[in-house]
Length: 198
Image (cartoon, rainbow, N blue to C red; front, side, top):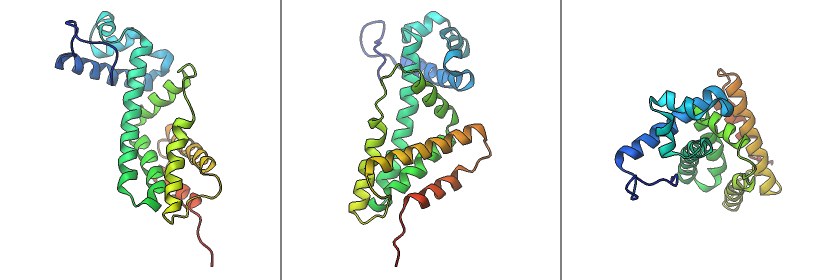
């Protein structure tokens, strides 16, 4: 992920600069998860990182830039894990792999989950819903063509319904850490896969 910054010499960032940026991204994720978007100031980021605000500004020119980098980091971690799980599953079972891995990742990384939610609710309208439903709709279509019994009707609508259910399950886990998201994922999969009748 790029931040638009190069090293002071104008070339690629040094190992130290890359390490500092990675630290600032992690600190920002922690701060946003703990205090929300509004509670994550450049001063707060600097304090948690143990550096000056000017040092933060060396790497990221604005709060929005560091938040965007943190959001991108959390989103990339999520999409990489989900993509790997989907690719490893047989095609008819890829929608189930998507559901399990999406819910599982968000359960295992609650700070990333909060970072994604906070950033999306404060992004200024650049979010295109198709970026979320279209890949899943393609997975659903491929699963059906391979003999899977996932969903019925329009793949777009099925993908939107699954996305909404995943969001609700994850939101419930954020409010109730004891909520069993693994069982919820399996119940969602049972609801999504049509069972052939005699």
